[in-house]
Image (tube, rainbow over all chains, first blue to last red; front, side, top):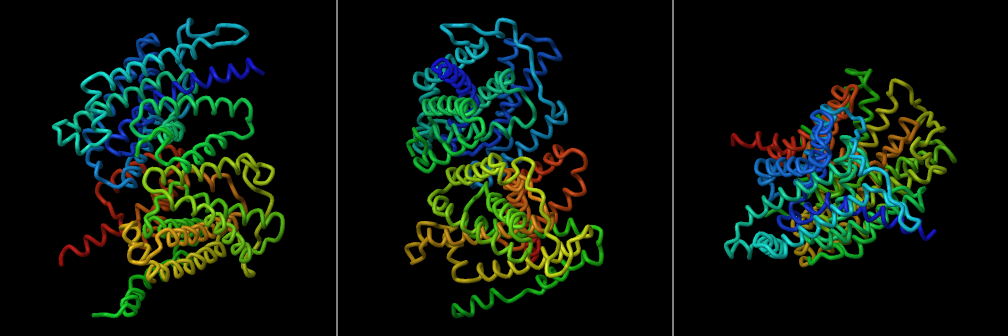
Length: 287
Length: 320
């Protein structure tokens, strides 16, 4: 019982790292521009398919494709932001939702066209397969890898936001956009870079997710709910909040699947509705 | 200066185009008798879109989980027909009551939120109900859907494979609900709803209780969505889990936005175009159908912010 509990905690934590990578970009960009980008998981899907293509068609090693997945997510988000999204910053929530859901539908159909609707998988290097046995617990290598990558990126992000000039601009824009503009901060530029960074992290998350949950064109819709839960629970524009929410969600989802499998996703939605009713601005949200 | 009652009377007068439109809804009986089943599906979807229009177009409540009430109505009608009796008209009333009860209960939660929290919450409630119906397979049949019942006829008209009774039944119910909706939005209550949509904090200052009004509108919309769901159950004699799905909530939103929200006829026009297009184009693989829906959404948001009816109105007004 105790070792199964530790196992659930471990697996849930690894899953939470994945959810964090997928959602942190959306949280920060939502906090900055109040732009509801439901197509965020489509960027993740682009990263996932970039890794898949590079590995299966061009024979790249798994690790080398990860930066490319990041780049693919970042490039597609910058292109969309510059050409389409920026026209809608002043539009209503509903218009933004509809528009970005339209993008999701298009992306699902386009990937179904090029890659079929089959579930795809990749072959990770041998040292990432198998598991370690530590004190009666079985730790899958790939999940250890996920946790290491997730923690490293969190540390990097916190450093970037807390200790650099760019981070200061971003924090200022999240706190009070008009004031930041008034002080001469180029909010549009900061937003574009943040958007690209968030899209890139989502792309990386999409690539890392293939080994855990597989990849098919409905990824963009299936994980949207999880990402939105992380954002809504963690509070807008908060990296720490997203991290905590992602870990809580990952662990409770794993625990739910392990201990109450007949409930399905019911538990997760119940937690989300309850938390939203209790604190609509998110657990760590300021507004 | 016109008096208030003269204002409302002028609003409720029927335009000749409206009369022509409703006469045209009878055409499928003679022109396309092979497509009456589709026509009945369109009428049901139009009623569902009309119910969403009441809360989204008039009261400004954005809902991504409106299928919850459609599904509750559908399952209520199905369970009633399976375990008790299969007379559809009383079934319709029971389904409407149950959907209304669920709507009233959730309205207390929904009206407290706005913006992203509202969208998330309606979506969450919809997903919650979908999962509940999926898990409670003993009652609902789970993913296989509710089967093993038959609604043979309505008022002596048999539901057959040609769908004549089905379309007549759906169309009459749609028209009656439309009359109710039309009456509501041209009443002082409807005017107050539009006021709340435009400015929710200012309306209480002139004596309109915002939240009470919104709760009432939400409950009425839930009743209508439940009736639409019950119609689907009666005319098809099955209930699939899909009636509660997120896809259905998203589809009805697309339909309403496409036709034009806040225009009463928007949902109906949207339903006709959407359903006919889906029937013609979706073909073998629904994945590609969603490409066109996505493109449509992008184009409508960018270029037709008030939907087809809004666009048509702008074109009509331009020369003057």
